[in-house]
Image 1 (cartoon, one colour):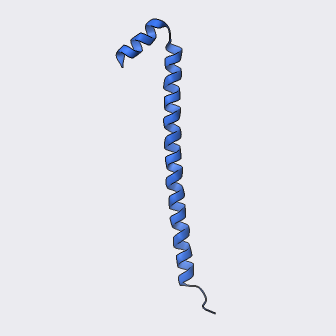
Image 2 (image 1 turned 120 degrees about the vertical axis):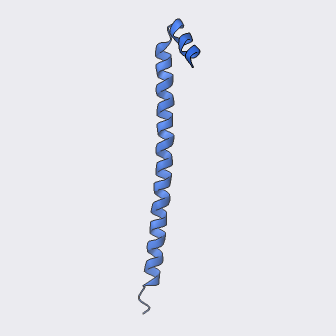
Image 3 (image 1 turned 180 degrees about the vertical axis):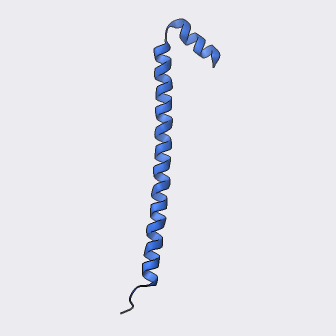
Length: 62
């Protein structure tokens, strides 16, 4: 990693390195957010399924 940074610094491409690091961080954040949203959706689906099961169990038979 040190040689990579040194290469960018010698060539004057620090802005490109900063942009690359920002893009990687933004992509990682996006993937994490999507994973959290997927898990939240699964929890909500489980909740609704259990609520429907509860309602079906105590439904008025008439």
